Amino acid sequence: MTAVMLPSGKQSILKKDLRDKVYYRGFSQSTIIAMWDAQREVFWYNHNRFTFYIPMWLNHPEDKGPGDLFFAIAECEPTSKQRINLPVALEDNCISLAREAKRRTSITR
Image (cartoon, rainbow, N blue to C red; front, side):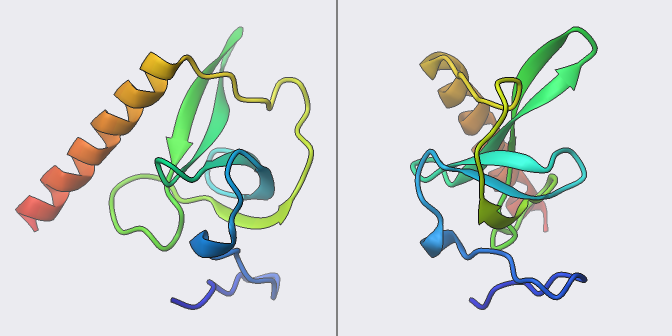
């Protein structure tokens, strides 16, 4: 697949070129900084819920499925509030729910 051309003229980074546990600057409806998780093939970011942050995942533009997409432009260094610290059980639970949602939508199409 070729990179997605963005309105700014820049190209998003392909999945094969992303590095595991590295933070990227980019854009989505939810955030401008996200961390790539190569094992689960999703981006993670901290979603601000008023007084606390909740880890949330985003798909890469190459993925088909429901949900917001994160268009990674370049590697970056996150602030302390943007750093992701996921308990393993939460990671696995979130991803299994995401995979199940993706599977159900592909069945109904």
